[in-house]
Image 1 (cartoon, rainbow, N blue to C red):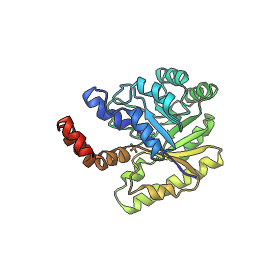
Image 2 (image 1 turned 90 degrees about the vertical axis):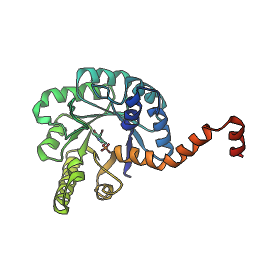
Image 3 (image 1 turned 90 degrees about the horizontal axis):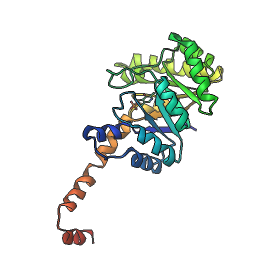
Image 4 (image 1 turned 135 degrees about the horizontal axis):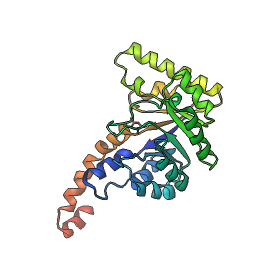
Length: 247
Ligand code: PXP
């Protein structure tokens, strides 16, 4: 059955905008699980722009489903993963100046190093997933590193400007999934998926998990707005009146 990993990075983005303690991604993860999330995903970036080390440490103890740690394949991050032991890691390219992850990792750029990274993590019991584009050579390279998973980058599909290119990207993702399965890889997918474009991706046979963040956090902010304002109006009243209006 297709599962949903909820990426809660942008809860931390809101918190970091004020460098305060709210909203706490730990609370968001708990509520996401109550809502049916099958897993929780966080991206610990080198610049710590949203998720902090403290978040990952506490989530490791509190997440009841599975914790997917997204990170760049750098020495600093590998050491953190080996210490915290998430249920799996998704290795992504990372550029300081980017707003979000811009595309899949180019595994061919340093295949020997990437194979060593997989070996270090997987021999410590942490399955590895490579975030890559649905390209034949990248999928082959992922299998050569002995990683257990890939996550196919759905960003180009999500950003396609017309139906023809959307169908083209969908077909690359479908073919990529089948190629990966034949090579013994397990397949996840994500990036840029929304309530409006998710269904055709959810229909691709062989994909196990979708990692979705921005659209869910965006909706959570809006569907909670009315209640949040109502609660502030209550908080502004004298305690005596608050009691009355609760009755
Ligand atoms: N998968 C990967 C590898 C990502 O880097 C991200 C963004 O952090 C996502 C999935 C989720 O993307 P979105 O926030 O667009 O749903």
